[in-house]
Image (cartoon, rainbow, N blue to C red; front, side, top):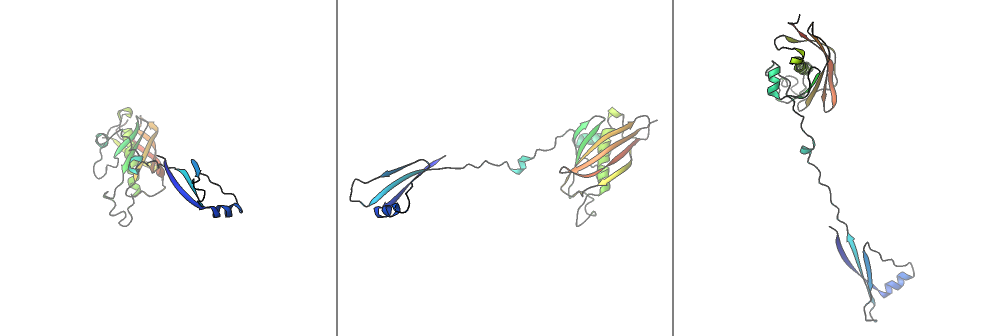
Length: 220
């Protein structure tokens, strides 16, 4: 809301005359100004009334940080994951599936916390998620793709068979959310062999990548 303020300035006639010899007197305002002379001619003062507009600035209210970032979507929750993967505590390393294309790919997350049982030993003064567990977590995401009916997988005979071209780009620490994408590159159903590409991210930055081999031991 704009506010109006009035100010009154008193100048003697002598000061006006003195000012006139040096430079003109300019009176301005953003809204209006008026000069009123008293009826008494013997008065030596001049009254100036100036009205100005005061601009009030409104600051846009910022969204609190806890409301700025939406949660990951849930395609499969932990109960659905437990129905697919045979792993259990302390070795189930997938908390939620956030994207799934049947027989093609899956994206899942692992919430890394200081309460994970490997941190007391790796390392006591600098908690870093072991690289082998990052690989295991990614392989479990691959298992979610390969243990589905679309590819004829089974918990009884499907195994993690090998890794290649693995690179660890950045450390993963307590408090990070590990986002893992596993994509099926090749599947030889006759031999039960599946080749997958895996990439893991934290905050959009690549932290681990590699190629994975899965095998179905009961395939003929």
